[in-house]
Length: 161
Image 1: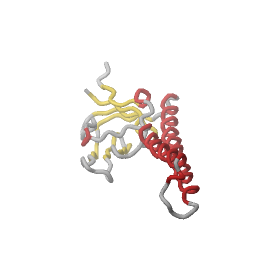
Image 2: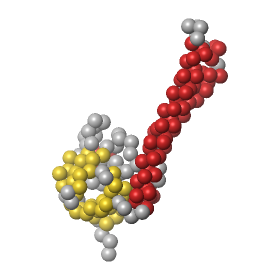
Image 3: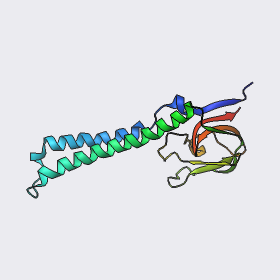
Image 4: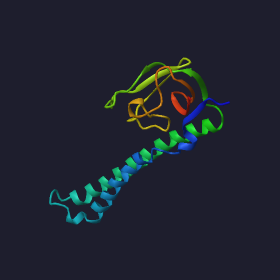
């Protein structure tokens, strides 16, 4: 009988970082408009309408592509390791639990299970589990958990009923 319930599974969650990369598309759109209407830009140096719109568009495309490539690469790597059965598994009570404050943009929630240390934040872009207890996450001091992880990234989290 399984006394654990799965609260996070990377395989079921899918690629969740797309809003971060898609945010850059707003600036790509602005760049396209700037290029299209570059002759109507406010007066300035003569070169301004020929350089700024293309520079803005180029930077926006580059940022968006890098944001997507890096976040998707992390997701793909974790998913592959998980599907190949190479994720490490630890089980036991949550110890050394340090919750993240509700407004803790700079802080991370951390804890250990079976000697493995984990830390994460709602404000850190990651493919792994990152739902802190201050924002409704399930991890609590002393709670029995089963964690599949790749390094410090939690790819599956199960909590005892």
